[in-house]
View 1 (cartoon, rainbow, N blue to C red):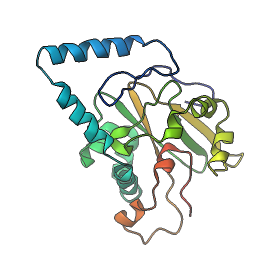
View 2: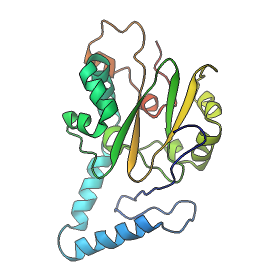
View 3: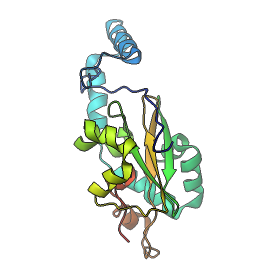
View 4: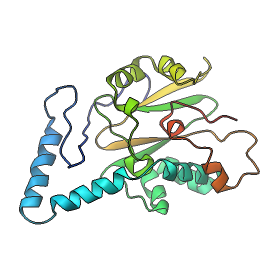
Length: 213
């Protein structure tokens, strides 16, 4: 996905499992269907509202530390890195993360390409890996400008991308979540996996910042 193309299929929810209405838009078909199915399952006793609440609370209690450990593993384990980039869902199972029903796509920053992530219609985000999205990720101005003027947005985060490097913007949606694999900083050859994980920030895994060398 590049700076000018992006997907527009989205859904997100409040802490009680109900769809959030963003910018006064009407609910999309998927949100209406989700609400109907959820309420039916509760009425039939298949699952309780309390169970849904506990699951959401558990996910909301997570932070970006798990994502940092995944990145550090990819930096030191080439086989894991290959799996992460080709089949993210399978690779993160090593860390006890089940991405279902969504799919995880991991994109790698290189000397030629810098990746960043947005959700243009709401706030779809890999919560199982990074925890709760930051407030700015959900702001309308970020969601709109990240696609139209990504270099300008990046510069406001203090991230200046050289003109020769391509910026690719990946638009998350209800079925697909993105995670950026940052470049390993130079001079870290002697650091172990735990020490490397401490270098990785949430923003670097969204792609709005780099990891200082």
